[in-house]
Image 1 (cartoon, rainbow, N blue to C red):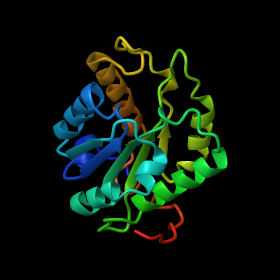
Image 2: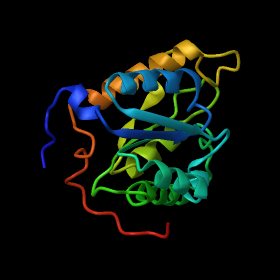
Image 3: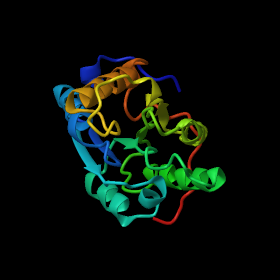
Length: 199
């Protein structure tokens, strides 16, 4: 099914967006995205878990409770920065697929839910290339945003963006999410159904 091309106000208005992940889901990133979504009439909720990883969210009741409570139309995941040295790419891919499958089943009221996975930014002393490659291969049906090209101000530890840098990151993500003019809820309508898993 080809996604309908509608003005953003029509595409996002009335939708519920849940954004979760590691400590990057805070400060400028969330405030920037919240401003964009609210301006288009969407409800935006965020939840960050410091030092969290994909396996942690994939098997936690924290995620399930949030999905059942909010019943989001759109889910945004920001994970990977704490996983650059995952020793087993095959195992990590399995955790990713479980997490994505939960996003497509838990707390779902309608037949479809849009999903976006935001990968980790580039670091000076941490190579995230391997984890990004695994994420790109296993994020489907979520659309994947490669953050390695984001060049924005960092804090003193050089690990997190400053508030200004986070807003720049949010702006880039917002533009990317909307560049195809896809309507939330129809982005993955043509994807095969995900098998049910324990919730």
